[in-house]
Length: 306
Image (cartoon, rainbow, N blue to C red; front, top):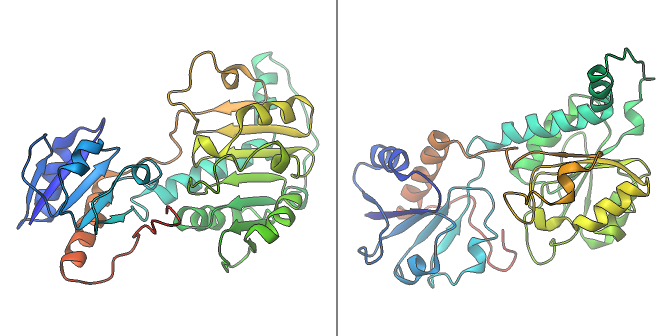
């Protein structure tokens, strides 16, 4: 069995060493143009040339959770695209979103601004019942985030394309229930996969449906958000703020207004990073299962794009 590693902007050697240890019977090599055909590929943002040179691939294993960039390429016929189910990212995402929700709810940014001026201040505590948290996207990451937020007793709402049932959360599904979900949400968390249907889903029309004083947390993809619409709703007071970890262009250009907007917190796409050891173990297990003809979790539906 031959496995080709083609991950843009990724130091290959630690991954190659890990996969060779996990798959001792396989030939694992970093891809170079003209390399021999492989049975499986481990990729992140591969060039089209790589896929064109590998027409016999059985599995294409993405080392990140998002496969939107990969699905835009012309893939070998018959190859199955498989995404990471977790790879250590779920607990990181739960940490990050919980921090963002609590930081907003407890007004810690305002306290920090006061402390910078040596000002001892007091703010009346809020009630959690007035801050329902709505999570868009209820996959592995969304469920883990919901579990974490639930520990803090916020009302929990969830929305997904197909119906889900999650303990402690009121779930909504499909276009017919989307407006009700938004109208009942004050803190909106985006964890959706990026598809043609979800691109620009956080536009002015939809964000305006959030409860007044709403807060937006985007940890999915930058293209879910219409930047200028968010700024307009922040400036007119309908939204109280936003925590943004992903952007349409990354790194975020220095001239972008998000950097200096007083109601926006920017982080550099760091909410959840792929952890190498966990990912190697998971991908190696899936490759072996595929070779045995067994079902593999995380296979992407080309029609849905996730």
